[in-house]
Image 1 (cartoon, rainbow, N blue to C red):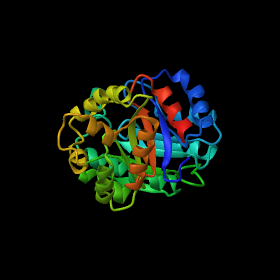
Image 2 (cartoon, rainbow, N blue to C red):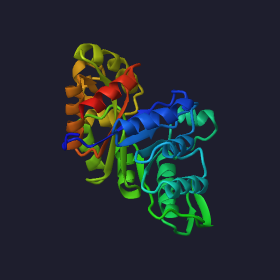
Image 3 (spheres, rainbow, N blue to C red):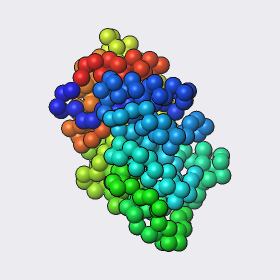
Image 4 (spheres, rainbow, N blue to C red):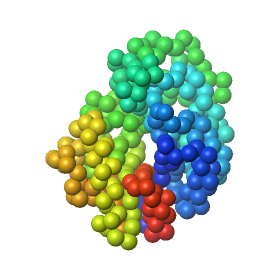
Length: 301
């Protein structure tokens, strides 16, 4: 692997059949990837079950669980689950927290009015519980009365926050170990987000990936997927501060936010994110042929 590359991960997509995970995890480890990530999106598969399965079927691969919606579980039981995984597979887990898509949270009756406060309170409580502290909190979302984990981990995992606005990034800087940025982060966006979070947080970047022999054919399927993310309208600060002035996804925009094109294009993109401060770049499906793209990247390292 080129020394200028950050750590490279791949994501098992939320809508992929969960029974395919054991084989995919073994393949990702054998292919030489550093990490395997999951997102817990409604109505697909449970992130903690995914993480446990991936850890059980690999020996080296680091597992990233994120984003885990903070309002769907009690923080104490979340800490119990995470501590269990960390004791069974020490040093191999990172946990990313987020609020979740607001419409989805409302759909299941889990929505709260003060979203950022809820995320920060859960992050603070979770880190303290995993550190073995006895925790008493009375917040707007988290209420604990003298709670201590029976089996805290010897080494607590990194707790990251998936957020892109300046207010959320500021909270991430004071309440967590770092940040997770979505599939529309340019290198300039990474630099801005890290600064907004306090300067040097641990940083994970998700990047849509499509690699082929033809640059134009590989880029084309990514464009529509990136456009859908842009059209969510929830990443405006990250886009603007990352230098994306138009919300129409052009080839230039695709090349700035995705690992798309030839293997060399994808490697160069990962190097640029690394130079901007990303510690991990997670390759996510930018086309229907995700596995093939990941294999080409692995072969080119």
